[in-house]
Length: 311
Ligand code: SF4
Ligand code: SF4
Ligand code: FES
Image (cartoon, rainbow, N blue to C red):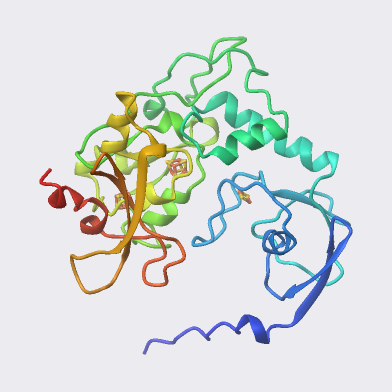
């Protein structure tokens, strides 16, 4: 017999918790995270691995804040508020920690197609991408195995640079742009798709996203739902159409219109956002706040647009 988990208590019925953030008193429902409480006060806290549709994985640590009485800085995206908590979001210790995270990422990862917020935070926190020296040459990261880390040359910053993986007609994987936020792994796994085609392989600096035994995507369990592309914050996972337009210098978001519609392929009612440039659909996303699919689609909704334009 299947036992159903008890339904969560509605927010309105939850105990109210009073705390202080940056000297301001705020009252929120029990179970609210520090990040959510900050947002109710309009305080911006940077996040990279957090997404409201996924369970927090706590891997990037750019969202840390100082909590009085806590020895270590705490990740605001996952830590629930507690009565009487005193939180500081902009102390020198917090800023130093965030700067270090952003600096390590900026020195090792190609952030050229990451969202605008990432570049704004790099400026705001004074993160210096060159602090660790010039970028080291590309390494064969997929060859790495336990105990055999290939160090970069002395004076060079190690990077995650590697050859772009283009092994199917739908999307490109450029892990030189991967910040290892785990969002794609979650979206492919138990948070949405339950396909488990990708996971994290390796440890430490050699850790990387990989299919099982690093097989090409068509030989993996991938069903091309594209949910991993939908959550990737850096453009490491990208539609072939976007990748090619960027490569030829034609990608221009200022010339694009986004039209929201309902997927015509079946009766589920998924919402599609069609990104159109020069009368051609160049990619398809789905709104995170839509209660049918919360940003997720299947292969037909995500990539079936070729049918609409005879491609
Ligand atoms: S396209 Fe879908 S099935 Fe394939 S790796 Fe991405 S999330 Fe997994
Ligand atoms: S490929 Fe994108 S979503 Fe996946 S871990 Fe890397 S940055 Fe995150
Ligand atoms: S956003 Fe909180 S740990 Fe990454």
